[in-house]
Amino acid sequence: MSGIVIVYHSGYGHTQRVAQAVAEGAQAELIAIDADGNLPGGGWEVLAAASAIVFGSPTYMGGPSWQFKRFADASSKVWFAQGWKDKLFAGFTNSATMNGDKFATLTYLWQLAMQHSGLWISLGIKPTNDKAATRHAPNYVGGYGGLLTTSPSDASAAEVPQGDLDTARAFGERIAQVVAARG
Image: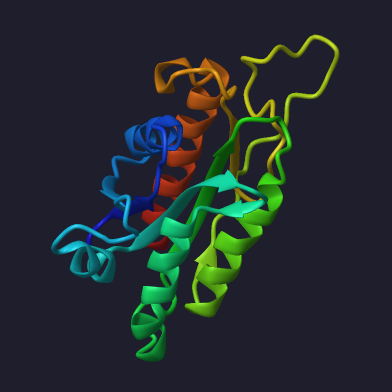
C-alpha cells in the first residue's frame, strides 16, 4: 500500500485550504471531488492503494455536500468487494459558523468509514477552552472525533483562521504517525 490520501470536496475553497494543511502535515496526496461529484481519472485506484484515507467535506445544511455524498454512494462498489477493509480513516469538515452542525457531517464521514470496515483515527488534540484562549488557539472549535474548522461566510479561502490551519497540520502529523506505527 502507498501512503495517505485525502479525498475531499470544496465548494468555495475553504475546505480545500484545510485539506492542503492536513496534507502538509501528513505528507499526503490530495484527490479533489469535482463540482459534479466525480473523482479525477485514476482516483479510485489511488484510494485502493492507500494505507489511509482521509475524508473531507464542507458542512452544508447540517451534512456533507451532495458532491461528497455522490462519491460516497459510488464507493458502494468498493464496499461490496470490501476493498477498503482494515484501512485507516480520518475526517474533517468546515462550515461558516462555530457549530454549524459540523458533528453531523463528521458522523457521516465516520459512518462511511465504518461501513467500509475501516479503523478511525481521532483528532488527538485537546481543545483550547480556557479564558485565555483565542480564535487562533489549537483545536479552538473543539473537535475530538475529527477536525472541525470554521471559515466566516464572507471570508475568502485565504482567510481560513490560522489556528484551524495549524490544527489541520497537527492532525495530518498525527495521521502520519498512526500510519507509520501500524507499519
